[in-house]
Image 1 (cartoon, rainbow, N blue to C red):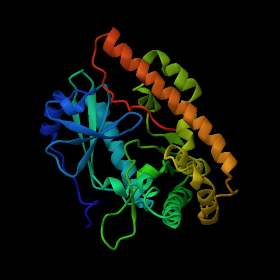
Image 2: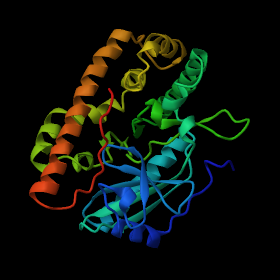
Image 3: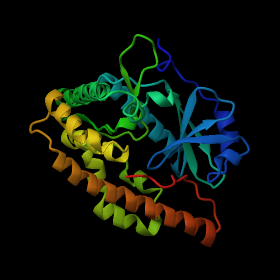
Length: 314
């Protein structure tokens, strides 16, 4: 078994100590120091001092242990389906711990992969031909998921976020596979019914503003990951955020040539329209979260559970 896929074990008692001493706004100053590796919509990704080679995704969005355990079971089911659809996943494990603020946090431990081998890093390192080869591999894997959906549907349908930062080149010498790492939001439908409670995606937004997000954005955000075309457009549009708009035209052409699922060719103009809407959605969502953080810390004098990114270039 290769290194990234090697099984992961978690020490729940250690994570309980970590959670008890965590300073969500300054994790490096926590009782057990940690550094931020990345951010998700409802999670933060840590490297914790004393635990080598493991990245921890923390989801502090649950009211009860039973609720968190049910989410963990759904996560494991989703990962099993992704593997059946042909994706390579790193070793993973889960642990449920109580938070000092009274909520329950789910930790997803994932085998850590070298930062320089992530897709959004690779596009800055090699030649254009290398980037297009990477895109061809990603397109083939995404196509494979939708082929799986065609074979297993309508009983089972998987969703996927195909952006570049979710794909990692294997560090194993001589291997050529990519690993898919964005598994912590288990988006899949059984007989057309969404298995994930969409309200979980709103837990990190201010309570008073969730109705706005629910009314105008939630369905659009969730449904796009079930659309093969939208996933491909999102993959290309991600080049704006990664500061490589010069690649949009050749990558669009490569996707059109390589995908066996696309019914109509994509255009750079369609990618641009999508990107403008996507940037608006996530900019508003982050702005709402920053308002909530300020209110929680300065007005209500309570701990804010989520860690927010700084300025994001989009």
